[in-house]
Image 1 (spheres, protein in one colour):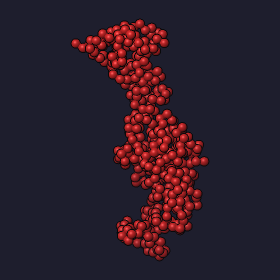
Image 2 (tube, rainbow, N blue to C red):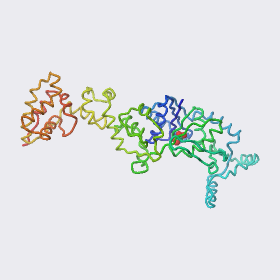
Image 3 (cartoon, rainbow, N blue to C red):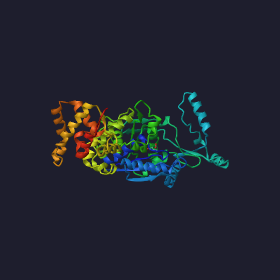
Image 4 (tube, protein in one colour):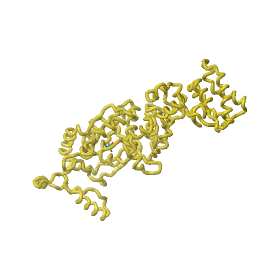
Length: 451
Ligand code: GLU
């Protein structure tokens, strides 16, 4: 069974890039009928915040990406301790004492000699007496994972294809600080094993971590999961700007963006499949194919999100939005108004136009006369007859065209202006029955003539 996870650090709000990773992991799990787990990476207790944990859960909930389980790293220190002890016993982690300055100096010297700036493993030469002396002097060690420099590091990346790294060109990573706290690398592997993760999908900024972590899986006696690394998100003009990079879900929600729009766009951005606002999240999941993800950065454009959002709204049923519509706004009104909306919130403005009052427009005397005729024609409609009521706009305009010889804008615009107070808007044929007979008549008759 496929088990995926989304592992955010609660040191900030989810931004569009994190959400994309979460979504793709959710889709992978849903596609296979597997499990999608949330892992809160809060080993950094100083920077992690409870309000961010709450916001992450709320954002995933809003998006409909509900996890099938959740673990928190801060509750799992015992497990890390036990697994770490196994690595100590196996000699796969070792104690080091170099300060940041010393390491920096070593790097400079190596670079000066044209050597790769990797840790020289000097601390491996220390004996028990050396460690005892350090301890007596109050020096606490930090720990590095001992890479196996003879083992080939290779994997078949779900997106990038065959990957190969040379461990001899890599530094033994620090996995634990001198104060006993954990760095990201090892707890993540311990959790992926413990949680039974079968597929890790994350940003390509983690590719070199994967090279290291693969050896950790092996050192802990586990079969590594499959890995896939997706190209990072960029703005439409290159790098993701600071503003876009930190664009949170709450902000999108306030702008009237629907979760389905975020999902429709992010599901396909950076793939060779077209963004399709008609597809629902489960359908998108079913059609997910990692091989269609490109290596080039995926460009995120807010204007595109707004377009997708409008297209999503134009497909939402009345049932899906009823709770967010003004009182009394029924299915017929939603159907009529929906094609004109860029946000669901705008429905209230059009509903106010339907209900009235609308400001009576001032018109030249010709149009004023024209509307008087229109009112007379309109009065002939037998409003109690549903067919007549529903065809009222067609009847009115056909009749006026015939009797006044007007056509196009001259025929339609004065009517629209009188009936809605606006030059543009939803289809009048759908709007007019909603406005109702008496109100429509009053609006046609209420137009003032310019002095
Ligand atoms: N907490 C890590 C991050 O946000 C998780 C990376 C991973 O998926 O392993 O980058």
